[in-house]
Structure formats: C-alpha cells, structure tokens
Length: 124
Image 1 (cartoon, rainbow, N blue to C red):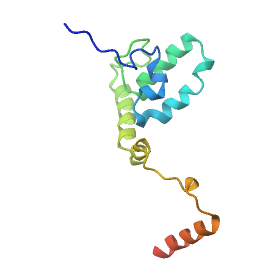
Image 2 (cartoon, rainbow, N blue to C red; image 1 turned 90 degrees about the horizontal axis):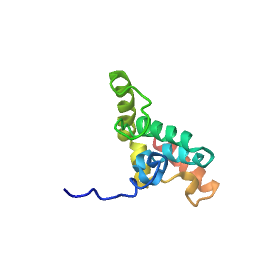
Image 3 (cartoon, rainbow, N blue to C red; image 1 turned 60 degrees about the vertical axis):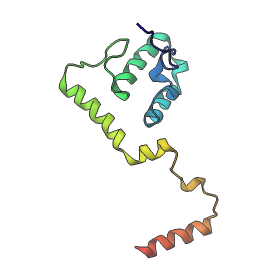
Image 4 (spheres, one colour; image 1 turned 180 degrees about the horizontal axis):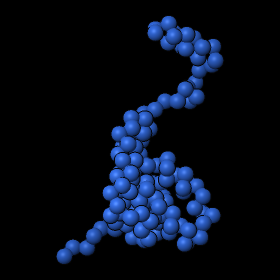
C-alpha cells in the first residue's frame, strides 16, 4: 500500500492554530488565536487546538481531546451551521479572494471623499 504524502499541515504540531495551514475564510478567526499562542504552554495549546478544530474547522475526527459531544445533534448542528454561515458570507469570500478595497486604503483626500459621498447621495 502507498504511504500518505506528508503535507505542511500534517507536519505541524498544532495545525488549527496556524492560520496559513487553514482555509482563507477561517484566517481571521485563527489569526486571532495564533497571535497569543506563544504565551501558552503545551497543554493549553493542545486544548486550544482541539477547540479550533471543532468550533472553527468543524472537524470532530481530529487527534487530541474531544471537547464537544459529537453524537449530540444540537452540538453538531450549531457548529456546522456556524461553519456554513461563514462559507456563505459574501464579505468573507471577497476578503479571502483579496478583492475588497477599503476606503482607508484609497489615495484620495478629504475633499474628493466628500464629493464622492455627495454624488452617491444624489443618485439615491
């Protein structure tokens, strides 16, 4: 039988805590966790990794302690619904594709901004 190919995610001890090894739609939530994992000990990281696997990634088949009763339909439904809502969110999808332009990032001065806002109000 062939051996499974090692991926970057499988070579990391706590993959659910490293944003670059997860989907871009989960990036913001995981980046929040990743920002302070250096302050945790191994036991706390293992717990947080299990939490992220179940609550953010909706994965109940992970290695490590199980935090939720995956046989309870209400628990599974809550977690899967949250995951599906995130996957359907247009803003999340656009952010993951990098196609959102924030007004703060545009190189215009306040007078031009006021003019654009006035034009938008006149259209309505």
